[in-house]
Image 1 (cartoon, one colour):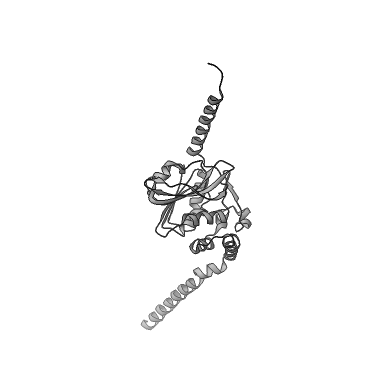
Image 2 (cartoon, rainbow, N blue to C red; image 1 turned 120 degrees about the horizontal axis):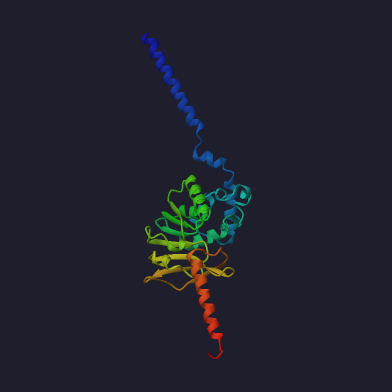
Length: 270
């Protein structure tokens, strides 16, 4: 009986080991996953054709674009455009920014591994994912709830644990997480929102498109002595306008300007 028990024990052990070995063999490694990812080559072509050949040089930025799966951040029916230099609708009248523009602004921001970055306009989450590859923490706010919820799901699914995102008006910043080493804005106000200046670290930088609906440029500014330096225009661009409080302020300023103009033109005797 003892011999039989020992044999049964050995047999059971063999079966258990065999199952474990089979399970381990069935589980694909990271290398296997990469080899079966058909978008790796597409990302490499995108980086070469649309980024490197158009002047993007930062090797860390280029590596981030080789890594982040842009197709995950757009609808299935338009995924064939994912690695073209295209602006693609994502809903709510918003678009995912073309790869070159994302790369250009990211490179201008000069992201460092220890940085804490605030982003206005999460959109589909692609810019936040790129930054997540390059900095310590990303805080991102999206004014459209459906986009904010969708981006949060995708970022979580892809494992970007260093991105904190929420629904809200990006104009207000994220006071509880401030100060930030850098701020990036992916929609265009007519002037820099003051809360973003207040929440930027001394010596920090902000990359932001400024202008009206049809005439904008990307600017870079630094915070020195509690104020932003003279804006430096680095490239013409065309982003969707910043909505929420920024839009209301722009409308108010426009109204005041119209009133002042009317007063100046009113030459009738009183």
